[in-house]
Length: 354
Ligand SMILES: [Zn+2]
Image (cartoon, rainbow, N blue to C red; front, side, top):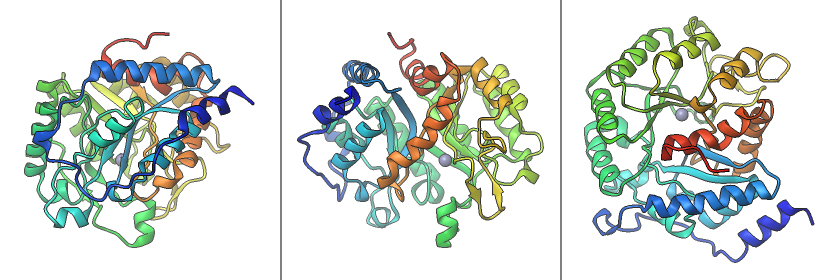
């Protein structure tokens, strides 16, 4: 039996299926995360996956609907996909929000059950909790990120078009447009700067939005920002300035900026525009040389991400395969750095020991 199979059989056996239906506990009853202890488990799992002959992936950006997550099945899928750790944020669904839930503490359950697999990450800033009441969401975010010592905040949607699946379902509520330099944006950047905890943004590529991002990065130079979805351009006609050299200049000018690599496959079309929105790929379906050169030059600024979400929790291996196709086209050592080394350095401030 190949070593990779043996690793997964021994690691994946025996877990019970658990489905979460509601918030597990009040926040005050929960102890802060012990990141020093978790880090040791993370390191061992990264090494075990390497020893099994796979490239370990640390996924910096995925989310879930906690009501739809079968945690044991999900953990087994992580094993099969060679995912060392995931930052799996909770998106409080509308049904729970209507019942009064504002901040979901489910990540504590993920970490308690599978401490070597999950990186504590704050709730996702999305509809309805974030879009309806950004101040309340930020109150909760600041309270729990600090009290429970999260090393990472979730993905805040400032400019977000409906996803392809939402477009198919006719869901337009996710056409989010909040000013990055509005009151909520300033408060978020300021908290990130004071706390040192990185946060993620979903911010579509539009010419008019790019100077705003640059100005905020300059105004809060110690706020660590992960801009999700490298080169995901849904309307090319709105993004005349965005290119590999634009991104390179932005990264060189703003050392506090990171970019995650969650994007669609080479054939993925964004139906509202009819365009292939994952611009990392060239017309032959390979990583465009200019993008590859920027990533190879600045690998610690690019983070592996899968962007699994509440409506595709059972498709983890398929989504990971797309990421792996991209990673496989990067030269070493950039491939290993983007797959796991960059996340490790961002989260722990040190290089991952060999
Ligand atoms: Zn996103």
